[in-house]
Length: 131
Image (tube, rainbow, N blue to C red; front, side):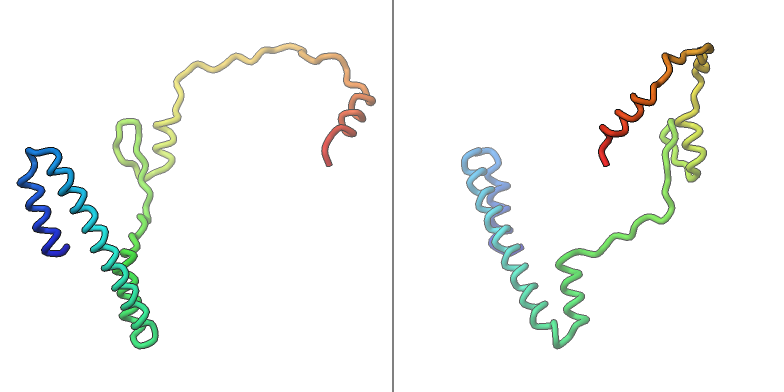
């Protein structure tokens, strides 16, 4: 943030009632912020280039500042049960979420075999299959 951008932001805050003036100042603030960010990025890249051979640790620090630090991933997964409560046990969540109280489906009994399959039908099916 430059002093110029801060002054423009203050001017924008005072112009909140007038829509046209507010929008024009807002566009200018955004444009100047983008320019300042671009200039900052270019300067950081130049610093990284100069420190590449001279001071690698400083270079890595600048790269980290530029890219942001990596966030550590969580080691222990947590699942939520049907009440939204966190559970550590995958089995407990499975039981709570997938436990089914519906009645069992009756299996139809009887011989549902169709007509017998002929050898020629099997040969034809095999020949039509892709390799």
